[in-house]
Image (cartoon, rainbow, N blue to C red; front, side, top):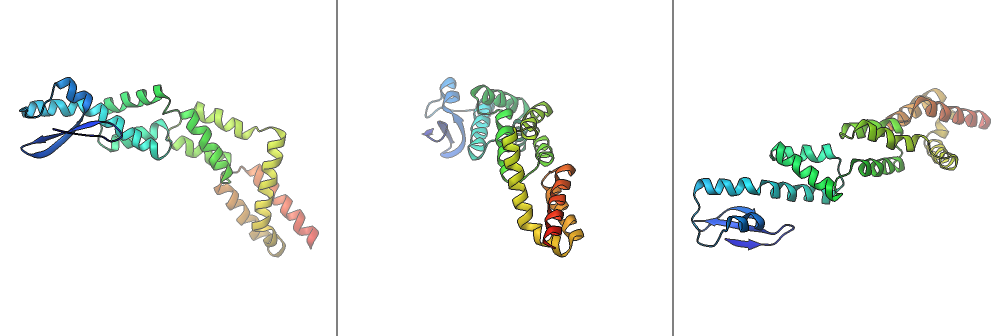
Length: 212
């Protein structure tokens, strides 16, 4: 057996001069493994089974190291990787206990990121639901987005007006009906409701009329 160090300390088990599998040092120590030991097929399987939680944790930490994920997303990825549901559930609870897995934190960061990218509440809500975030968590998070204070609301509307004016202002002068359809599609795909879309249309129509 040869020890190696990585994100989690593990031991490589060699059989007949060839590397067969890895186990956590915790598993190796508890089993009292020593170089030169003879392992039956049953003992090998027992070691691999005992190591399952450690392999699952290592895989989960690696996935979270790439980006934050919702509980459902991480569960799905671990199940797809072949880990058993019971071990996956234990791993999720372990991560939550450490503060590494938190759907409220994930949802808040996701909303902030997508809002900066121009997404509206409807689309953000749908995407969070698709990622398995509980509806109550989605509702609480979106409520903060849908009911900002007056200063934030004014700033958001100002940014949105500048964006649509830059993209569609000239089109409302030359072909208002086509421009309205394009604007509605543009904002609709980003999750804005019809009240917001209608308000932007009225603003650009009024500006186009004054220019004409």
